[in-house]
Length: 138
Image (cartoon, rainbow, N blue to C red; front, top):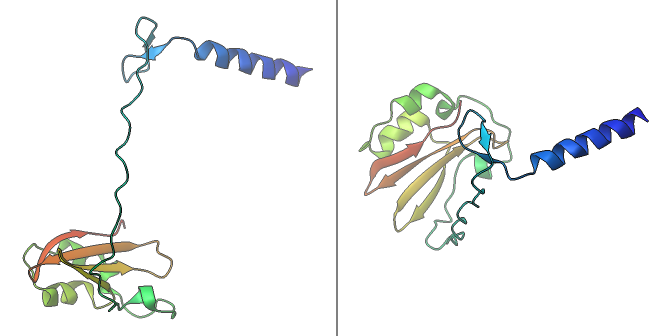
């Protein structure tokens, strides 16, 4: 009996909350004068092309061995030391050689990723110089 009463009270609260209330501030106050407008639709997804990617890949993404040994890319100091315009050799000194390489017309991307894909980052090169990077979320 008590369970039915609680279910009835919950349903009544949901019904009352579903009225013509609209939020007006981030503080949670509501008013009933303006209707809620639907958000704009999201843009259509874009197709991703793998044309031009290099079949050459190295690093832990293609390895079946467990992560072992020092992996400099897992140290935040290497990522902090990156600067735009660095050469691939300079980046390799900071982050190590354990990357997967993808080459396209736009440039080269190195992806660093652990076996479980819990930690990953990437660097991109254009014309042989470091352009952008996304460090792992340590």
